[in-house]
Amino acid sequence: MKQAKCIVNKHFKIADIDKRVYGSFIEHMGRAVYTGIYEPEHTTADEQGFRGDVIEAINDLNVPIVRYPGGNFLSGYDWKDGIGPKDQRPTRLDYAWFSIENNQFGINEFADWATKAGTQGMIAVNLGTGTPQEAGYLAEYCNIAKGTYWSDKRVEHGYETPHNFKVWCLGNEMDGPWQTCSLSAEDYAKKARETAKILKWVDPEIEVVACGSSSKEMPTFPEWDRTVLETCYEYVDFISLHRYYEYEGNKENFLAAYHDLDDFINTIKATADYAKAKNRSNKVMMLSLDEWNVWYIKHMDTKRWQWAPAIAEDVYSLMDALVVGGLLTTIVNNADRVKMACLAQLVNALAPIHTAPNGAVLKHSTYYPFQQVSNYGRGSVYRNTVVCDDIKTEKYGEVPSLATLTTFDEQAGQLAYFILNTNLDDEVNLNLQLEEFGELELIEHQVMSGNDLFAVNTFETPENVVPQTLPVSTQPGMEFNFTLPPSSWHMIRFNVS
Ligand code: AHR
Image (cartoon, rainbow, N blue to C red; front, side, top):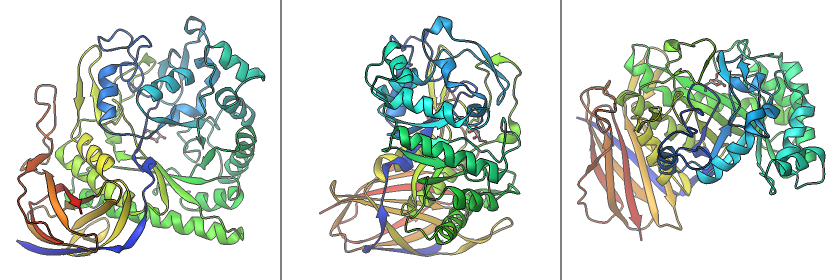
């Protein structure tokens, strides 16, 4: 058995956690919207066609913000197609996913759905085929009370009260050649800056997010981010990051994703700080990791010109859940700069929640680590000093074998500790020292582990990969010992007095 130690001291706080790091994403992609969150014929659907069983599953994830309507879909989407009487809305070709979009769900339906799902919208504006002016009209339609053309249109459409969306994304992955009307960094930066000006003139209370380069592997990375930030620094509040991982046959590499994400975040922080210096600015640019997840993109099969095709419906394994847990530790440990993050996505398309059309909801393995950290990783995050073995990975070199996270919600008097053991064959005896928090009573220990890292949940065996609750029996104190099985993810909770 390997030995490890983790010391956490209340005086070494990293930051208060912005709850928006537990955000997610609904795109018009595959069956995320149609037969996902919206299916009027479903037995649990309400009068607006929103599936009640899906809302229930989302409620348990405690998601405070949801990005909408895309994603790649966004860059060819005219938001005006999705407003007004449903029988007059056009059916269009969606250039991103080669699907048919019938526009039965648009911005107003999203606003209502978000309220019912207990979340807020993070609205993305089209900077591909769209113009800064059309983005401004959307902000006017959503956030101005009344008395102008677009705000009165909203009232006419039955929405007296403005939606008041507070976060706006300036396009999506505009460096990607797959994007409808992708742009050079210089062209995007100018378009984003001018759009940001209009959006903030319409509503000075909003925050806006500029597109970072769409992945670390892009040739544009990180030069794109530098250019965009230098041009837009004083006009935007966030730079976006997108990051996906998939298992490619090497478990060590895959389980070390948490470490790679940290490296990516650090590079963007450094790039943003360079732009801050170049702009002689006092403002600290925050990061919005508004797409992250495990995604088997290579298995993706687009089906041409179908409505709501089943695309990107990844079935997640135990190993995928471990990786998602590890990524969450990285996100929250960076809470001083990462103020928003979106698990991409929420329903059906690369998502923890799967629906059968006219049928049941299935929670994939990845649902559970997200649920645990989102519900209990609240309050503030603390620095963890970890002494453990490294794992040799082919892709990232030597990486600590343990990923850890400590959060403390002072008001609730609760401390949560999350840990991923990436050792494939070794148990770890962990000595955890929690200093200066007061006396801690261990109240819960949940673990996800098993012999079959490829085990999945199915409609027939929906609880094949779920957290197991272990008995807890230690005396209250400040020091605890745990045995961590090989390849395992843990949530350990304490009451603090
Ligand atoms: O989340 C799926 C897709 O991944 C999004 O549409 C796009 O922004 C990214 O490439």
